[in-house]
Length: 299
Image 1: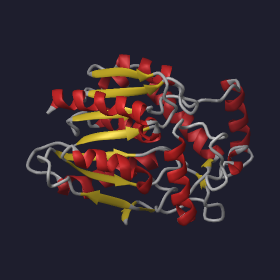
Image 2: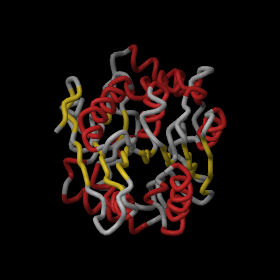
Image 3: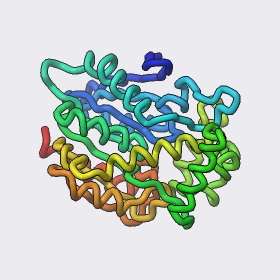
């Protein structure tokens, strides 16, 4: 466990496949509600490409310390600066000791993890050699509701002191009872079932969704991303992969953000749902094909 301020973070390190030429370290950052074990297949893909992998559970989810002790299924944060502190501590105390000489790591980041990494890159543009993003959270979907209405409701809930309450409907999205037909993150039934079966054996790792406080914090963080000059400061070579059927984040917002970055390539996987890395073989295969071509140009 890694201490980051008042939070305890669960971290993990994996050696590269010894049968492959060593290519350095990859930092793997998952999204909201996710946990290290969900990414074992992704970790094996990276290890098979010669990368050692370092990853973590963000505060409030997985095996890291929960922030609403009487409601541990809720993902809560008061400010996204707390996630920034998680990543900074992780980089300084876990990743840096893994590096050889002046070699910089690469990164693969999904959804909320992509948002947190982009914010880190805006302050530390030369800390990574290259970064690949899967459906990064540059705007969350309101799923048919007017965005102004979601903002008004969030503001009211915060004024009423209900910031740690779960967003309406999220308590019903327990991954132990969620059916494949009701979920909206992948079209791969087998990978969905694999994650669900794991959580049935380890239910303490699961979370359902955000609190109103998380939504309010996300809105403030996203407003900073929209400011002139923010994306333009991120000079790290980057590949952003958007999901054409994303119902969690807004792919068009990611595309527009990528266009503002000076060294970024945007590519869409049109048939993919939000969890590109957990999609059907032919879809996540498109991610790995693009990743290989991108990394080959950077290393």
